Image (cartoon, rainbow, N blue to C red; front, side):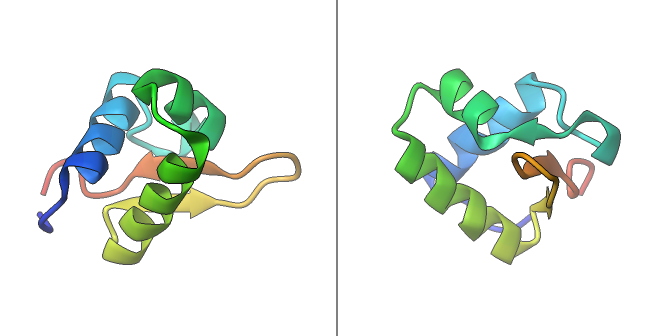
Length: 74
């Protein structure tokens, strides 16, 4: 797995705790922000970084984009 900083680890743990481990169970940035208790801007920046690292996948939807872990077992 790629090296993650403390904020990235926090967001990954939140995604795991929320059960966002496959495309059918995606979570929005708001869901993740509530779980992390961190500022929404920080969480959004971390989500972008994790997508770029390939650790999570972003799914564009009509209202809000969703995220899920793609490298959970790696």
